Length: 81
Image 1 (tube, rainbow, N blue to C red):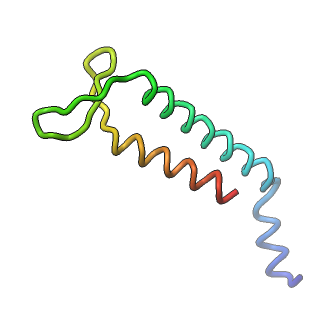
Image 2: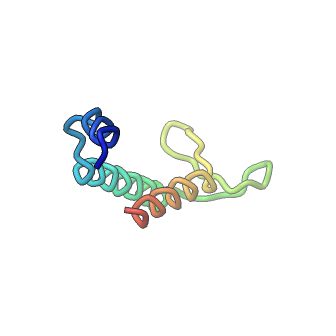
């Protein structure tokens, strides 16, 4: 390696790629678990605008499309590792 490569690697310090990959994998697992739990424990209905939404305790609305997008992103991250 050249001196420039050594400088770049040296500036990374103690960066552990495998440790960071494991953290990212754990985060994706958590996202999948949360989304699956929400989808499993909510009831879906058609609202006034015909969007599929679900009602959670406390009158919080979460849209199924956003939950599915989070799920797809987490699956993509897991597949990329």
